[in-house]
Length: 171
Image (cartoon, rainbow, N blue to C red; front, side):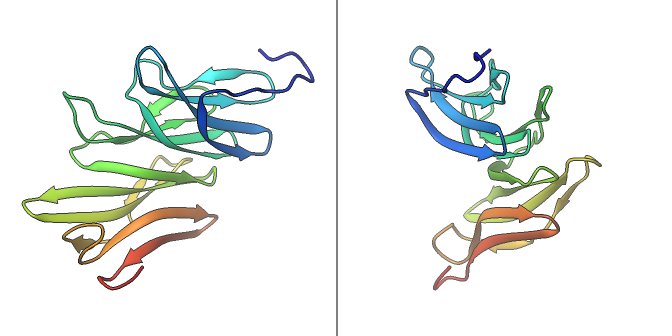
């Protein structure tokens, strides 16, 4: 717990995100070499991914935090993790790389990437936090992120979902 009125000093940390009085960031663990997802509200500082894969790309919406958990030797694809204000939940568990999550506190969006032979299939997915329903939003086929098409960096705000699209010439 932080004493009332104290200032938070964050050393060795990157990628801070703020939503109201809540903050999330990544902290490098000098022993394990993993990136820890940290959450701070007005009362507590919590480590959200102990025992889980290294975190990346944390985003916060209200008291909800989402991040990409990097793959391991046993399970090399990345997955999306979600802190609901009480506990950490693994949102995805599949054979695709799930990355670049974003949340507005009601919906979580991310990119799911499948690799089939020499093709890369990238899609945007949306997860409604209240209903628990996940929906595939796009259906894109590409050979790679910077070649013949693709999607990138989804964002959500209310009922609007936006993302970058690459058509082979420009984003």
